Amino acid sequence: MTDPAATASAPSRPAAIARPRAQRSQARTLVRWAARRLELRSFGLVPEQFNPAEGLRAALAVALPLSVAVGSGHPGMGWAVFAAFWTCLCDAPGPDRLRRRLLGIFVVCGALIALTGSWIAAAAPFAGMIVGPLFVFAAVLWSSRIAYGGLLGTLLAVVAVVAVGFRQPLALASVQAAAFLGGAAWAYLLINHLWRIDPLLPLARASEAVVIRLQDMADSLVVLGEGRHRDDRWHSEHAEHRRTVRMAIERLRAMLERYAGDPAATGPYARACGAAETLFAALIALDQAYIDRIGPVGERLATARACRTTLLAWRLTQTRAHHEPPPLLWAAARLDRLRPRLGESLFAGCTLAFAKALEGLAHPAPAPPPPDPPAQGIAPPALRPALRPALRPALRQALRQSAGLIAVYYAAIVLHLGYPYWAAMAVVVVLQGGARVTWTRCLERILGSLLGGLIAMALLLVFQGPLALSLLALALACDAIALRSVNYTAFVVFLTMLFVIVTEMLQPGAGIAGARIIDNVIGSLAALLAVFLLWPDFGASLKVRIAEGIAANRAYFDAVEARVPVAEIEAARRRAGLASVEAEIALHDVGRLPRRFRLAEQGSALRDLRTIAGQAAIGWHRRLGQSGLDGQPR
Image (cartoon, rainbow, N blue to C red; front, side, top):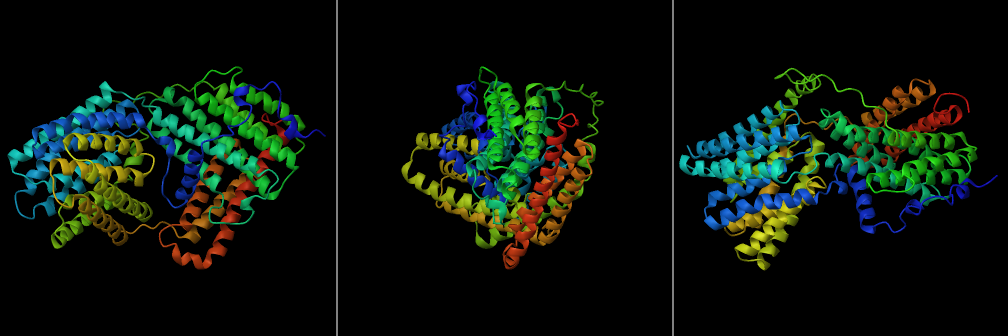
């Protein structure tokens, strides 16, 4: 019998996709390796979301108000600088209509908060300790009633605590509010009219990230060859590729929900999500075949190479370059040549799944007609159920943040903090959910502030004078916005440097960088204390998570065995994948140290959890290989 690995290479293949890039960037590979390990511990690292265009636009947004503030020498003009930066930060992914609405709310409400917060806080010596928590409570609670208003509420709360920190009589408070309105309005105009960036770019980046992670998984199997699979025994990064692909697909799904009102524009990305699910299921089956050493080695390797080529063809179509013949059609022809040479039905089923994914990408089905628009002034039905149950968690969140702020204000009095509003800002941005999210945010905020503060100290020794510091501030604003969706620690590093440099320019003082570090540590710890003491939400225990994961994966296996409709199998597979991710992350969650005493037992259970999923995927693709896509015997 001819070796499928040898016959997989046909002389007619185009040179552009003769083989995967042998000289892949070492740095990018290392970053993705780090991302897989950080994600297991709830630290996000998404290098594909680096956006230099947004960074350059933010630098321009900051440049105009910064030049006015430096030229006028008025401290209140600094509000225009930070307003422009915050407005760029508030520009979250979404269709133009959603982004404009959220940015418009931020510009108007932010100016009102800047005025009233500063003015009312000046009414009495300790009025800020009341006004700040009340404004934050209102901002968090109110934003929970707005679709995708979480970031808006956080930034309005930030404006509130900074306004309270700059308490002024009505005349000066009006100057601050006018400066905020000018800087925010300028940034709004720049974002929505003067320098528009493709609103679908985040979707394209999220789709690209899914394909890259699938390709990493396929590469790992090709490189393994005849070697022993690492996951045949449990280890601390067990099933890392399965986990990171699932998380990338879920990020794409979450992004698609933001664009649900424009199915015509998002259709290609929705199809990409479906194709990714199909390819992922086949890769899970192939991965388990490597672990269990199913079938001839040559067939396993040929199937893995075919998957890698399929993904490479997909990647080439994403570059929008012109290739002859088209990459998707060429990859499909390669699969057709390989399939008859595969004796193992599992591998034949995997190649059929690859072909199905390519078919969906190359020849998409017509999109269904869009639903009728809702009556004016009425929220779409899909949004109303999602908003109502969110009120109770939002109420707890608002109370937690208010309590954390009171603790910070008290600490500021006792410790004589120079910039207490920095500590208050840390409470607002760190306390963003349950214990897991707050814990990771706390660590990232402290680490980022420490690194950023130390680097800022060094930079202030090198760069002096308004011009040099202004150019440095613009570069920092550019980097901070460009990195905001990549990694929170990296974002905080540049954010800290930016705030220190701008404060040194507009309100010079001694020890600004050190004060920023101390204030952020205090605020982060206050947020952590609030989430631990007030309605602590640690999620289900590890034991429960593992039990839920095993149950979900058994349900997936049973669905395959029962030959239920494909849609039900795909839904069961997704539930199993999400449950597996939750269980694996819970092992490294807050309070993980006591679990180290039972690591072997827990690791064995997690391995069983993934093995069940692998066996279910094998069963489904064997059925596919025996029956074909049309359900008829081969």
